[in-house]
Length: 596
Image: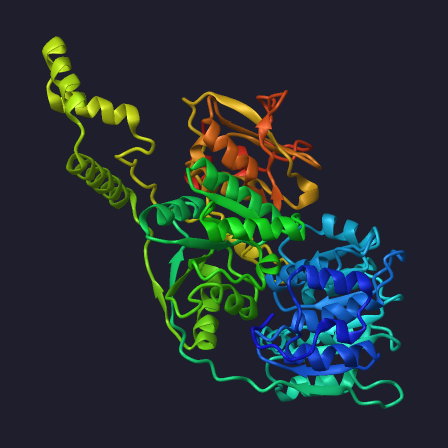
């Protein structure tokens, strides 16, 4: 929510006790202007047309009154939220889930393109009361007869102008046309172009001719941000490797790292702790007292790094936070403003760091406009620079120790070692360094950036054609390598394809695709061949890696892939020219085999 608060309290609105208690436990006390005007109107059953900039708290403005209409005992869709992007849909769903955490039986489902239909259809059929989704996938679900709106009590169009800009106006009209006339409707938009006003006139006016309540929150001119913003494009190394390198080489007091989901807070924290950093998660799984204890530990310095999601970090005020890292970019600019606002507080300087993929680069322009500040591009320290930093740090520690004195007895021991072993002082020092170093002083060279297709790089319709074209032919597996068979918890029901699995393993483990053997897909799992003796650290990374938004959960399989199997699906012969792992052989190689 925005830092701009009114003099009212959430308790003034008459929200249900379960919702009000949860809101207060999240640290929200005073509503923002858009919430002050929208919540009472929606609670009175009015349709609302809201015009407000990002950063004003629109999600709670429709989410809280929407939850008051939901009966958790009824297993039907009662609230529908349409969002322009899957990132925003996920974020809105997480926020509503958090707001309704104390409503027993409440289920919130998210549907969007670029992901498997199966799990989303299952969520709808099991009776989730709140559905948040993108226009294309929602329309698909309507046409399939899976999304039923008979019991719908509230329909919300969020960021309507963005959906207009993305060409979803026809889809929106089709979806809203299926909304029952008895349902309450609300539309929120940062701007009001003519097409949006026409949409509002068509769908927000009641059958009795009652006009919607119009709310407009004047945009504030943003003062030029004093927070330095820097961005790194993800390539060559993983985001986790980049994060640890930054934390090791930059000077900070406290760091707040934003990730997308609760599970991500745990995974990133575990990896940071294993790398020697004092980190802790802040997730929705913690109750209010546990959250307060975690924040107090951050203030006291017992922990230095906090890994959190947008929802649970709202209202967090720790002046010692010098850096905010956007490990995963938010789905909307409202959340971005909130995130970077956690640093540079109480007149201090702050720095916001963004990790972005090429498909997310356009978001940076929105962030710049909203913060009235530029974003600098930078490169994460490479292996050579990291080695130099570690060596320089060690050298400074040694100099400081010598200047402090008190090494006479240890010097005598070194001299005695030299006499007894005929080793030089340099050799002894090198051996001691090799024995004591916690991190390698000479870091292995970074891998060359790979051009794997991004698994989520699809339009809202789930169109796979562009990605299939980008998934170019790779080398066949190295015949000199011995393989073990591993089982992963991702299969055809999740929409997984062999190239998705290859891309995930190659990207996350930094493994050349020639070391990835056969892949065999089943309904709920898959088998994949990887080199024998896979390091524990690599296996741990791959256990947490995701394919189609599902964790691999990789483990050694009890059975091996049959030697003659060349078909990743395992139910029919592989098409001509299809190599192991479901990848097509180069045309010349196919032609050569044909004449052997």
